Length: 110
Length: 218
Picture (cartoon, chains in turn green, yellow):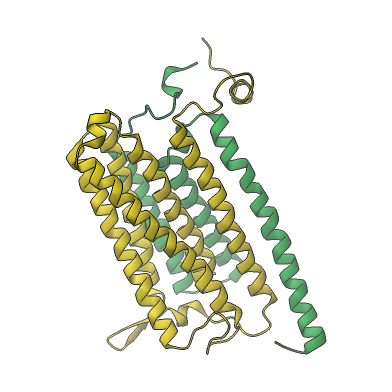
């Protein structure tokens, strides 16, 4: 096994953190302006806001939380279960659409 | 020795009688706690998506609800933007504190931890301001003057739970900062508790990324 692959032994130059920090700032500002200027088409705005959020999350996890320098045994134990959340969100959103339809159909509104 | 493939490495780590995660138990348990916490926030966000889609009334426009007046101009989401930048900055100072912890630099570690605590308190303060403002305007978990009643439930649950995490994090970091400054970790010869606290703090920032994007911007 490689020596430097043992967790918690790496030293990161401060420059890396400053670059990530700057990237997070820029991505947040871009997301804000996408909403501020109400960029159209709407699907593109939503797609970009979601994409920027995912990139920011990946940056924080990989560099600030050092996940990319951990052993795969931990990385996969943490990241793989999160796929279930995507499944949950898809089911809940389908259910939400259905409930909205039922409410419209039976109650007219509310 | 040649570096084994990723899959082979995972199998070797998880197989046979040995600790699976080659790190201190404190760090491994923090990661597992954060995974469970991710499921809590993920469930809340999924519930918010479901409630919003199921709402038949118009969903209140976040740009209008969270606008601030500066002079005579209305700037949409200004407070939220500032809160986001404060929290990102606190993550940055936390990362620096962890780095100085690796270098066993007592003063700088303590200093940056204190700075992180300060930024965390600023964030909580602004959140309190936002809650007070909305409650005065008539926002409740079951109704609000701007549209779909589900808005209040989602807002108070998501930001309330997140704010509670930030508050807990501030207390946690304050304890770690005091210990660092008093030289407890110097005597131990190990600053890993700073890194573990950092994991928690970065996670709180990570959750805010999604609340900011999905609740405030979409």
